[in-house]
Length: 217
Ligand code: SAH
Image 1: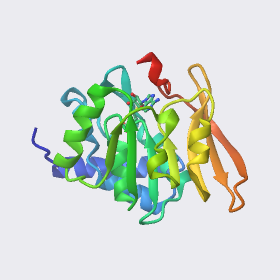
Image 2: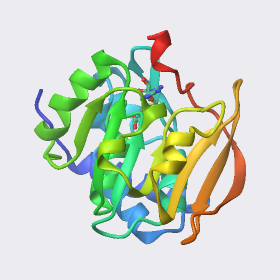
Image 3: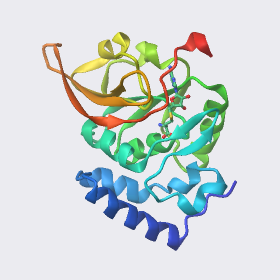
């Protein structure tokens, strides 16, 4: 597959960034990353001409790529600084992974569906994203061998905050995770203080595919 980014695509991304600004995404680094990453590369060609609308699309295996406004919102809450270690749960298409790379993060990402893992493991380097380390496994467990992480982002709706992820968050770190069973989740930001205690902040409603446990594979 040839990854082509045309003038028209770049123009559409500029318009998308304007829309996201209107929808409350203010972080300049996040907006610059969204302007840079060709989202159409992560979609089925059937959706190419809608790639820069604020919509979610099917990516196969019953999963979806999140709305750009959701990607923007989660990325903004993470407040990523260059060089930080970021754990992503739910690699999916790899779009959010690419955004994290553009923000300068050292990315570790876990996907539990083999078909998506296999596809994205080939696609991301072909797009020029060689640095993220991709793992096939269960996000509930995190990556104890690579912990602790400065930031953690979960891109599927979790019934509860997995304890292993809290454990693997560095003191001073932030985790962003949609929590709730059913069609809607609240966006939760967990901030770990230097003494290891955590405080949670809750933001509006979002709608994610569920974070599934490995046993139901
Ligand atoms: N960040 C992705 C969003 C994909 S949707 C993107 O930008 O495209 C959420 C993803 O989480 C799906 O690919 C789903 O298979 C994956 N997922 C669900 N439960 C998981 C788990 N327990 N561990 C790891 N990945 C999981």
